[in-house]
Image (cartoon, rainbow, N blue to C red):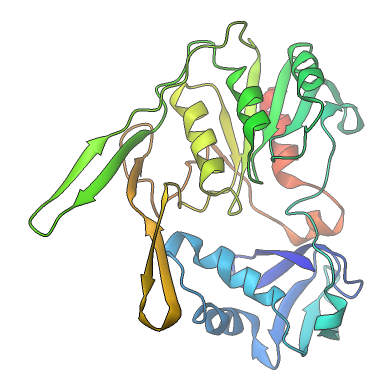
Length: 301
């Protein structure tokens, strides 16, 4: 399997891959003879998406290889290569972003800062130890580019020194004659012993639903600097209906707003420090969002 991000020209660039022919930083120029941007648009026609999720779903469609696909790749050195990939080559998943265990950022020159991946299983069995280590650090980089679990919320709420009103939530109801909304507050209380230092949190197109809710909760408390790229813009409960012919449709039956009560759906989490993804960084093994968060916390950005 492989993970891609999109370049400014609409071409996918490889971020991570366990297929040796796909190297981090490679730009996909063509797929089965079509320009990559055009191929992505065609693949996306087969997937129902909101505007905010279109780029993410279009890129994930490149992972679906029915049989064999032919690619033209351009390396960071400008060299072009013809590569064929068969479905048999794609046997395992790869992470959404470079894998890193929680702990101080010594290897990046900042032992005073700690990195904590808030993905569901990342701190499983070590939540208490992570909490203790957080309080020993001068700053925290939370990574919310995955999907959270209960432990994720416990760790994130430790920075709420004054609590959080949470995002503005409204449930939507409809009858044959009228439509109405009901406010559904989800405040978070202050932590009993709150973490006092600076906090940055990483987001991107894979930050979706509950992950977005967690970031919005911290944003509403003015406790984080959001670093990276906008999220999917698809937070809210899932309402599903069965359709004739064995089909089904799912959509959100809940209105979620930004902390300032402006539109969230289709927009995503607002980013304080936007991070462009450069193919050369990926080829060099750099996690650009993490690097930028470190600069923010260390006072350099």
